[in-house]
Length: 224
Image 1 (spheres, helix red, strand yellow):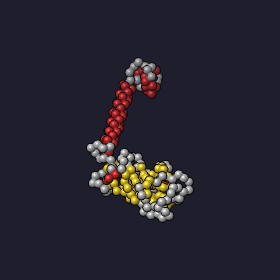
Image 2 (cartoon, rainbow, N blue to C red):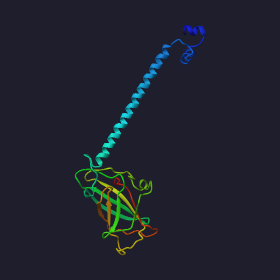
Image 3 (tube, rainbow, N blue to C red):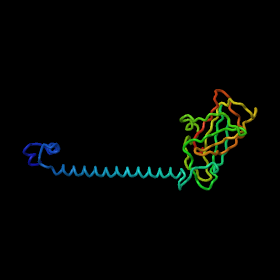
Image 4 (cartoon, one colour):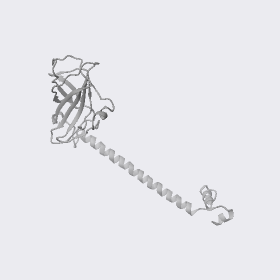
């Protein structure tokens, strides 16, 4: 116990509290040391915070560089319709025709797929069917497909991406008669004017239960 403690009859803990509150003018070396340690800790925390900020900036810069490259810079370019080969298939599923288009990169270099879904049309002998394109309901792809809605960004050479299609309620004319709809699926990538063409074989057009006719289209997904 210090001389002041002996005179006042206060315990060391009480003296420390009084000194910290400014009641005593007499300095306490232990409290000064604690303040220095606290200041050092704060300085180290600030350094860590600065490191985190720098890391965020670096990651953001890399992301920006990736986007710049995919948009036609010196890096990987966007996928072009002429470097993709398409194959399509649909089959009956609870009143609709469900399936999709498999797009394969036949070039020798990788390409970047768009982040938004393509524009898909159904045609019969160069005549486009009056079908309204829609997105799939939220969570539907995750519940129906093993890989769900995992979008594919980079398409390496020889690899494929899958666009899920679901055709509902064909209420228009049937120039193909009572047989199968052996039409064409045209997939137009965002930002391009040309399409990837894929032929359908032996597809029965869905019945007209509740017009209008719709076509649900997913983004570019990883094949199941």
